[in-house]
Amino acid sequence: MALAAAQVVDAVAARIKGVGVTDSGERVYTSRAWPLKDLPAWRVVAEEEDIEALTMHTPALLQHVLRVAVQGNAEAVSDLDDNLNGLASQALSAIFSLTPPADALAALGGKVKSFVPVAIARDFAGEGQARLGQVKVTLQATFQTMSNAPDVLV
Image (cartoon, rainbow, N blue to C red; front, side, top):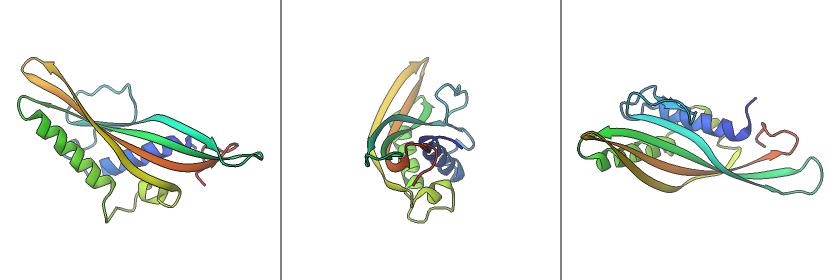
C-alpha cells in the first residue's frame, strides 16, 4: 500500500479527473516529472509534511500535516489570468463540493481530520506570443498514522 500522504494526493487527483475539471480531461498527473504536452493539464503533488508524535509509547501515534499542491497549467495568448483563475475555481469547487461523488477522497473523509485550502499562487512564462501559466492551489490535510504503519490512516 502507498504511504498515507500518497493516498491523499491520489484521492485529490482522482477527484479532479473524475469531475472533468475544464477540458483537461484525463490530463491529471501525480508526478513532478511528467511532461505536460497538452494544456490545460494538472499536477497534484505532495509538498511539505510535518509530523508530530502524539504519544510517547511505541508504536507512536503520529499526526501529519501535509501540504498538497494542485497545479493547473494553461497556455493563452490573452486572458491568461482569467484562465488561471477559472482553473483554480473549478478545482476548488470540485474538491470541496457539497455533494461529492463517492470516490477515494470521500472515503478518506473520516480519516483526514481537516482538509482546507491555505494558499493560491500564480506564475507565468513567455513562449513566443503565447503565455504559459500555472495556478497552484495549496491544500493542507491533517491526518494520523502509527509509526510502524505509515501507509494506514487512523
